[in-house]
Length: 198
Length: 198
Image (cartoon, rainbow over all chains, first blue to last red; front, side, top):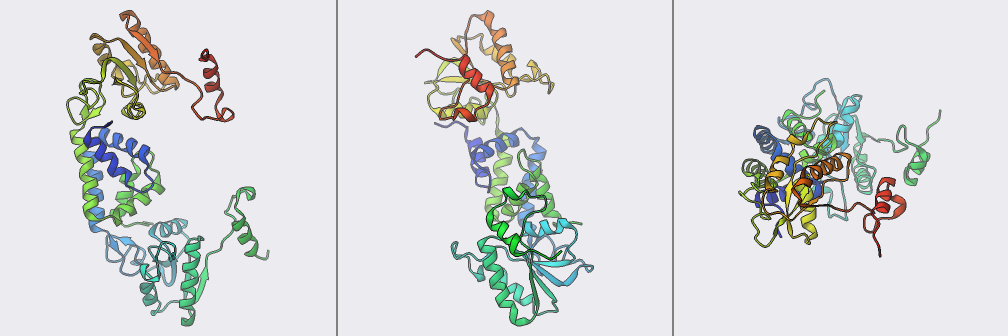
């Protein structure tokens, strides 16, 4: 039996295809959209289409941007000799929010995952190697500390070693303010292995 | 410092205005939308605008629909003499999914809340009273078992009593499969008060 009339059912279905939106959230969002002012719905709808049409890869670091170069690569005050490798633009944004990193980035758009059939050619690795032919002093690996992230970091590290460029990896350990008893054993072991002299 | 270029920032901002979408989800959704096929973004976008334009209240029960009458009110096999009062279309959908209810509904679009300044005139109560002038046998109150829902049920009950129409309220109690130790005391007390003879 059809609970919702077709226009509503269609909207719920479309919204339910988005990641992280289950059927309950899709319903709630659909009713919210129907109750929004028409001009607001139009603006949201147009913003989506415009972003889709105008956003492309930065030709330098492959993050998403609506210019040829993203604001970071276009910024001359950044240190273009230090490149931090991240899996996706959200990870870039997370580091950018610290406000402390002065180098530039390279966005892989994924991580190597034999399980999911994602190989080195499926992420922006050739593009990274191409950039490393320039004047680069340090490559910071900041892929996630998941199996895929670690595999990718290892792979890049082996690939880049022969170039003599300094390669570092961000530290794993206990999050600041984290309560030890709630932290998983793998992280605790990492924190122990990575202990520093005081 | 601008982390995202303007088209992306705008999309994240628009998505972040939706209910239940925090800034992390808005980012994840934005990147997903940018990575979708253009035709899929267009379809999602148009579905939103069309739903907003075409969806209106059912002239009988006030649920949202794209017809003059919703599929339930238009269904002659339903018992139009039994009306279940719910707060919103999602609650209607929840009961409809049981597949067992044969009556029709009345959607209030809210509940009386002195705290939020929502009074009897702000929900579809006049419309309910108008319907009750017809040939109605039973009014089932299925507002939420929150303070607002209970207040609304109480208010409707007092208002309808003089008409002589049978008024019932859905049972409160322990959810099926619920483990007693995890259930709040108010619910446990309700379950005790509402105990039935075996």
